[in-house]
Length: 317
Length: 172
Image (cartoon, rainbow over all chains, first blue to last red):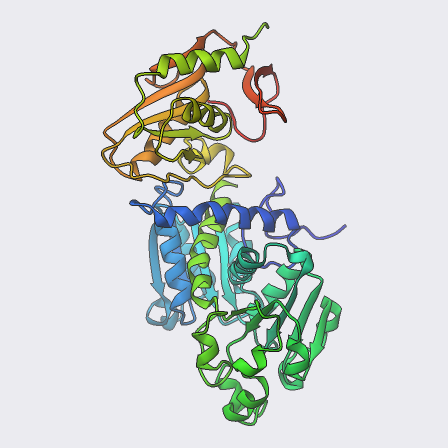
């Protein structure tokens, strides 16, 4: 017998959101469709709906994050939840409390939902198994493993501009090896029926089993970008430079930085995405980042609606 | 159960509203049947304010029991609500809970001068103190039965009653 998907409850609906991998297409579509109806809430006088009124959402960030934590906080507040942000670096974990002890203490404070960011892959799974049906857990990034709401907001952005996944070529460029963003996006794109997903980067920064995911691998960026509809640039994490995986930021920019000249190889209406924070002049040229094909700021706005959708779907299941 | 002709009820409703609706009235249809009806009223009554569409799914009081609906439509209120006379339109008035949710949502767009309610059928069974000012027909439908408005390919409206709850909108 196949192990039950730990994200689903007895009814087969989403109890936790831990990873995009293995989620059925209908659930992804439901999240994207629901997000679309939250977009207009942000344009009203009162930017709130009462779905999570009286519920407590705990943001547990064991790793620094500005954008993701802020957009989760805004999303929860727009759903009328009470939001408690825990800055773990300055809390009990530095005094030796274990992860699950922290969670138990917060559960005793009647937490309804945990949003978890942790440097260790599997941290959100561990918490989800521990709390079971007592609360909902959303993975906001665990190590190199997954960042499902980012993968979903990237999918939402692509659908917003390109409509139909089944005719698209999407290129993901840069450090895919260490990127939970790339992993979640690739799984989402595959599940949503994208026929052509390309991974572009140096051998040292691409996972070995990419082809098994149905991804085409390119080490030459110019060849990889040709005629694609979407270019997703990944952040080059500076700490990777120390591990001898890369010669220098300048070298990387020369081969894999997105410049207007390289972007011209993609389709004329191709969109450029980036999960942020950007390293201008390392993976992306300012002329592209600020250019008319960039949809990097809309990604942030869509991220709020997608997180509202995920939170309200979980809370209702 | 013999049901009245929805087209005739629609005409009756238009006749009642004539003279009460001004060109600057904001007409808002509640999805899905309420929007079909609102489109008719909007056209027949010569209202110049653009038609509003409202899906009160985010304001339902049964969210904790049944969760979020599938296939939610984005609400679109294309006019300034503050200070405006608003006519809310739905196909069937039953418990009054949908209307409560719709009014809550409207207030998040601004403070209207007043809200009135027009429905094709008032089927009784109210659970909240909600009343419609304009009603096509009043008749009792037993609890457990679902009364819905349908629209065919030619745009003709008709009423049907069934036992099964439609997935789209638990009728309230």
